[in-house]
Amino acid sequence: MSGRTKAFAAVDLGASSGRVMVGQVGRDLLDLTEVQRFPNRPCRLPEGLRWDVLALYSGILDGLRAAGPVDSVGVDGWAVDYGLLDADGNLLGPPVHYRDSRTDGVAERVWEKIPPERLYAQTGIQYAPFNTLYQLVAAQGTAQLAAARRLLLIPDLITYWLTGEQGTEVTNASTTQLIDARTGGWSSGVAEALGVDLGLFAPLRHPGDPAGALLPHVREYVGASAPVPVTAVGSHDTASAVAGVPAARGERYAYICTGTWSLAGLELEAPVLTEASRRANFTNESGIDGTVRYLRNIMGLWLLQECMRVWGESDVVGLLREAEKAPGLRSVVDASDAAFLAPGRMPERIADACRATGQPVPSTRGETTRCILDSLALAHRRAIDEARRLADHPVDVVHLVGGAARNALLCRLTADACGLPVVAGPVEAAALGNVLVQARAHGLVGDRAAMRELLARTQPSRRYEPSGDRTAWDAAARRIIA
Image (cartoon, rainbow, N blue to C red):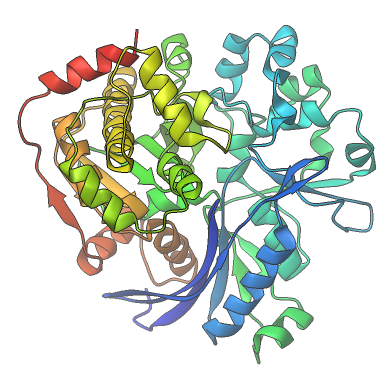
């Protein structure tokens, strides 16, 4: 292993913003700097909700130019959405946003051909109405899909524009609901039953694989004087975030990757494909080194983000201060409920959910914020309790990474709800996991445990011990969960 320090650019794309980070990595060094942040705003077109992927790509190029000389670039981003290319490799229109309504009612059509029990037994992927599988079935018969010769998931599309090389990285591919959970290859049975053409997908590649080099015109724009390799990372941002969890060697832990979504679960060596797991709506997504991300999707800070957008509010610190003063567990909602998926009217929809379950309706912004945070902590607890039971996997500590690691109130509530210590941080876990996979591919870091040891030595974290008992949380859970 080399003792030399190298620089790696992590392109990390979230549902509301993108960023380019530069990580300096050496034997005892892991230093991350944000060099460019840019908004990721969807567009409402006459045909529906679409991603402005060209603006996103422009932000990436500007970020790579601001990054200066780097030894490699890696791209991670959100899952399930994709771009379609024609025979010349040109994009056939802006990618559809996963919150678009085109998949409404599609799952029932799919289940008529493949019952949900069989679909889960083969793919291990939770039901979510926006899974790539349902998007492709919804697109059948359209002129755009008929003209398509290649489908690239969003991080792979960005990588293609940077390098000219096409591939399908496995951690993101697993979220399509078209990968066989046992073999890690494409599930031809599922695809054939639903008329999905697997030939649309580029060959699979794995975290750490070479993904090409910056094209000459890209190098010129970003100011690179020498060839710059692009390295496949855990291109699903949650896969990179889990790689960025600073768990100790041998520690029995659960993780919560937070942001627009909360992803709560376990890192396992094999999938859990039982009927009980399907009914609990847990997913088995691929992680780095062939691991399984066994987790549940929870709406996450999207609930608060949407409320703030409706309110025209930007002072999150002030809202959290008001929430701290509001009565705890007065009202809670099911933060995993698909009723909160679409944008718009979020404070009103939260009030409606409280009213429907006979709970007090939040009357102030502080009370609504407290309802959201209590509800998220409750959803975190439920997901972790059920994951460890279904996987027969003990948990002694919860690692909470991502944006909510800054939210001391949510971290404390999660510790209280789970009855377990919560270690909060790093905030930029996805970018750090992205950088570490690149660093390992370039010989600077050892195995997964060594990556996490380096994280623990170099990245700040804060530990929250649980207080009180779980009786109040038990009572709150009974109000919303039959």
